[in-house]
Image (cartoon, rainbow, N blue to C red; front, side, top):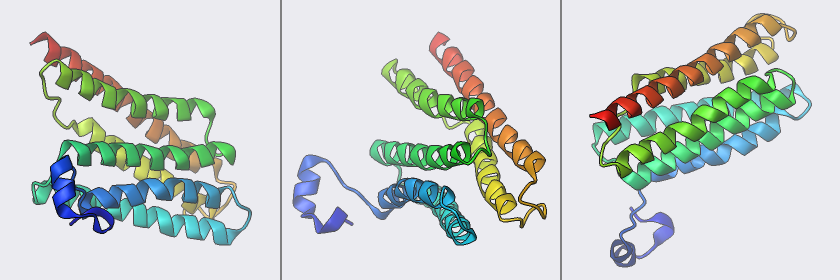
Length: 198
C-alpha cells in the first residue's frame, strides 16, 4: 500500500514504501501530544477522553508489533518509525504527568534517558557491524510504561484506588516505570558492550 496514494512506481524508484504497519506507529506518535493536552485540561471529560486514546494507542502498538513479527514485515524504516513514535507518545504522556504534579521530574529524566540512549546503542552496534537483538528488558519497559500510564489516569479518575488523592498508588506505578527504564538502559548498555567485545 502506498502512502496517501503516491505512485507505486515513484515510491519503488526512491526505495520508499510505507505500509499500514508504518502508519500505525505514526498515528500513535501523533496521539501523544493530544493525550498530553487532554490530561492537562480541567475536567473529568478530558481525562476520560485521554484514557480512551491511551487504550487505543496501546492496542495499536500491540497490533503493530504482533503483525510485524507474525507477518515478518519489518524494515529499518518501519523500526525507526515505531521507535520514534513510541518515544514521542510515551514522553508526551509522562510530561503531562509532570505538569500535573503526579510524577517527579527525576523520573521523567530516567525515562527520557532510556528513550534517548537505547536507540543510539543499537545504531552504534550496527555501525560496528553487529546486530543488537531485541531485548526482554525493552518488553518489560513497555509493559511497565503501559500499566503506569493507564493506571495513573485511572487513579486520577478515582477508578483504580477509589480516590483522586491516591498519591501512593500513582507513585508506585511511576516508580515501577522509572525502574524499568533504568533496567532497560543498563541491560542494553551491557549487551552492547559485550557484543562489541566479541
